[in-house]
Length: 416
Image (cartoon, rainbow, N blue to C red; front, side):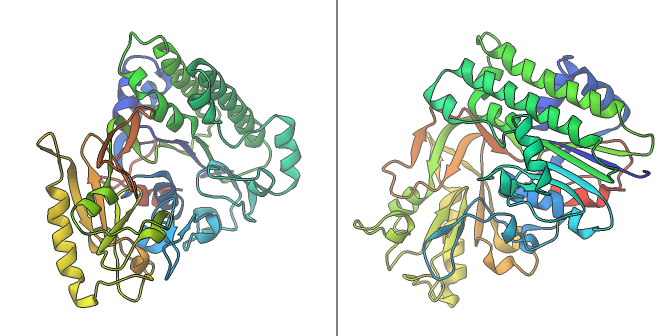
């Protein structure tokens, strides 16, 4: 078939890492491709998290249109959290935009449960049940037969040794590769989109390893990316001359040193009042002006929108201006920690915009934004996850694109 598209996703990998590993011949296949084709920074979503970014990648839409603003959301007229899945996506992914084409979609985050399409769909993280993650049903048994797993078990990193966790990462990667190989030749497809997510797990748990070549696990970090590079080479060697080949990440990664509990900061500054006898966000009491959902999404406690909402419509702008100043002045050891404060209209457009957070924060390097409701301290040292997301994703594409600074929302437009 002519004018096919292959979109190969590597979750959580920054432009700088791909550049360095390829320049140092850890990823020679990628090095060759970036010398021949376009290799650029790709602007991630705001906030730069997988659920939002992958939703923009597959729909070509702003979150204000596709309606995914984070891994969690607040249920209307409550303080209860919901966990949006593929059913909550308000815009069609490209495989439903073009139902006449045949599609193979493997392990794309936030596409669970799998839905009917012209082709094959295996949903990725967060997927709770493999059978509901697979369409059509007949592939469920095939995947069981090769030991398919949706994700690596991160509990191993917390409860067992790092070596065992690396073993698990490699094992799941090999199964993922076997799945790519199996489905590549399963039918005559127009779009083939496989995603690797173990790369994100490695970044979160082992970024400190990457920054320390003397670390005993340093070679295993590099070896994992060598294996990814082998997969890239194998896919490239199977392409037809007129195929579009895109390699990309949804967001980047960098060192995390401190978590910032933003709700604790709001409480400290008198913007949030918490009751003692309730749990989580139901602790928000009357008199509260704002609260935070991960990561850095600020919501005004509006009258009529929340059970204990007190902020009137005419006062919202005043509160937002106060919060902007408050967050820009948040400091750790005399250094400001917030790089950018975005108000809703700065980043969102579309029919779902009114459901968006009123404000989104982007932090400076070394800091990670958390909601931290009920936490004692504003700043806490991070002792488990040494890597955190940033906006520096990347794209490599084997054709000319007329976009100087591409974003995740542009990807669908690059498909043949």
